[in-house]
Image (cartoon, rainbow, N blue to C red; front, top):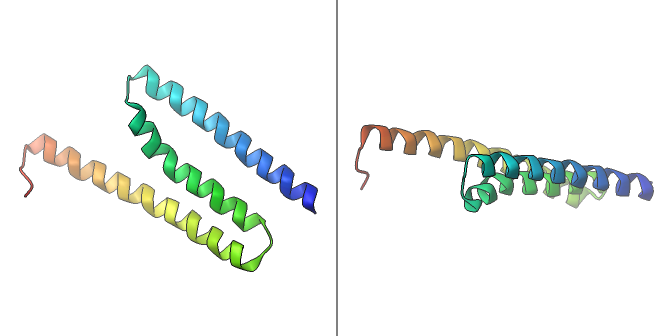
Length: 97
């Protein structure tokens, strides 16, 4: 059972690493700042940690894992909403107090 957990965690970190490399290459091609990469990777990191906790088998860690995975999804929705709002403000050149 312990070997399966270690294998699952290894696969998650492998997928995370490949995602990091691909995102970094894409953002570098478009000359986007590193801060944007950190903002994009934050929900992915939180999701991976939450999913690892969900695999642990301990009920309290599983609950925390569900919270973290849910939080990462909410964070993505907030970023999208904020991006849409800031895009509209910039497009219409509206001053926000």
